[in-house]
Amino acid sequence: MAASPGQFPDLYMLGIFGLGALLMRGAGCTINDMWDKDFDKSVERTKVRPIAAGEITRFQALVFLGCQLSAALAILLSFNWYSVALGASSMFLVVSYPLMKRITYWPQAVLGLTFNWGAMLGWSAVQGSCDWSVVLPLYLAGVSWTLVYDTIYGHQDKKDDMILGLKSTSIYMGERTKPWLTGFGVAMICGLVTAGLNADQTLPYYLAVSLVAAQLGSQIWTVDINNPEDCWNKFRSNKRLGLIILAGIVTGTLAKTAHKPDSEEHIDNMSK
Image (cartoon, rainbow, N blue to C red):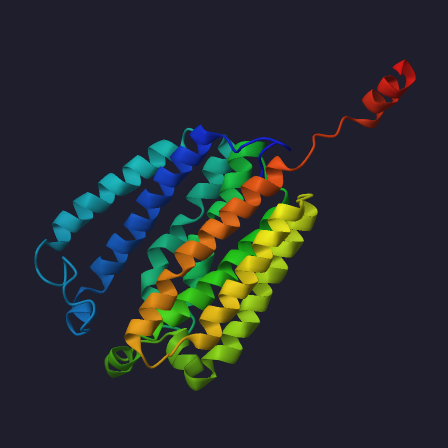
């Protein structure tokens, strides 16, 4: 979204951000599995996770986590100082998210705040600071999207979670899940449209947002929240949704034309 009008995104920046996302998501998973070792043993779907299954020790996991965070820090330090400070400020969310299911019925909201930090960091790494009129609605759209797909995901484990005394939006919403998720889906689309308008996006972007709205509506209203297999399939379909958004942003930015400052346009017109 921060790329110059009519240009592809910087492939180097895309590459290191992809690697950074892999490292930080992986670190979040490692922390989650360390915190939840005892809970994971009691849940059918998670009892085979390496720490819960006893395949690796918590100390080994801690060493691995240190390697993940060190590599991620090396990438972060290659950005400008504004981005370094912004990226470092996400660590509280990364560490605290796994504990939220013990405290609140809205751990998915904290997950959304954590997972979508890159909406701000990506812009600042390219531009040197954040254009909040673009990145804030984009960030909130991402948070709303996370609430949709992770609530669907959580319905797989709701019976085990209730026995263990854990909380989630899936348990809180229960049979009202689809109306709740429809509201978050609408918020997501509104955020994407607002970000697009403030970033001067073009027709291909809005066509992609329309496809996203259709896919999102389909998964929300056809999911069987009492069928773990269907919940898993609907959750996985969000990979396609993410690719649609990415394609829309790239093609929409390519379709932009670079505008000259008014003074340059005046000189050009005078010369003609």
